[in-house]
Length: 292
Image 1 (cartoon, rainbow, N blue to C red):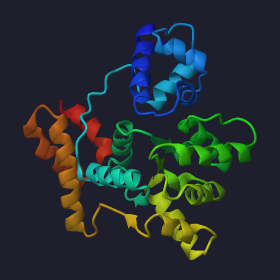
Image 2 (cartoon, rainbow, N blue to C red):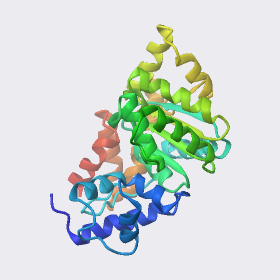
Image 3 (tube, one colour):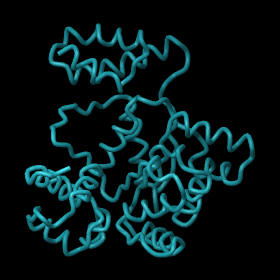
C-alpha cells in the first residue's frame, strides 16, 4: 500500500498530538512508534517523505486510529463512557486497579481509547494482539517507550522500573480475556512490583468473564490474587432482567443515534428496530447510513 504525502502529514499530526501526553524523552517516545530518535527528530521537524517505511507508517496510523477518510462519528458521554471515565480517572489518580467485564458491543473499547488519548502517561494495550507472555511484555514495554529487544527477563525488569518512575502512569488492558494463562499472570507480577505507583484497568467481555470464572472454579494459581488486587469486584453496567436491559439499550442507542443523525425524526424508529432485533452499537453505524 502506498502512503500519500497528505496522509503522512495527517499521521504526523496525530503523532505530535500524542507526544503532548507522554512525559518521557523524545527518544523514549520514538520507541513507542518503532523509530529511532534521529528519525523521530526529522519527523518532528516536518519531514515525512522517505524517512519511514510504508509498513511503519501503517503501524503508526493503526496505533492512533488515523484513516484516509474523516471519521465523523461523534463521541457521546453514554453511561458506559462515564463509568469508564470515572474509573480510569480514579485508578490513575490513586494508583488503583479495577476490572470492567461486561457485554460486547456497548462501546467499551471506543470509549476507553478516547479517554486514554486525553490522559497524560496513560497506556492502552489491546491484549488480543499479544496473547503470549513474550508478546505481551514486549508490546507493553514498547508502548511505555522502552527498548523491547534482548532477553525477556531484562525487558520485564526495565518495564517494572519504568512504571515505578513515571508520574502517575495508568495501563489499560483491553481484551484481557484473550491473554494466555502465563501472560495473564504477568499482570499480577507487574502489579506487585508497582503497587501504589501505577494504576491499572482491565477491560473485557465474555472471554474475560469466562477466564475469571474458570480460574476461580479450578483454583488456578493467581486468579484469586488478581481479583483481590483489582478491588475485589467486577464492574458491570448492563442490568439484568428483560425490561431493565431493554431500557438500558434503548437509552444507549438513543444517545448515540441522536448525536450522529441529522434527521432526528428517524431516531426513535431506529432505536426500536435495534432493540427489537437485539442489535447494539456495532450495527448502529451501518443502520444510520442506510437511514441517511
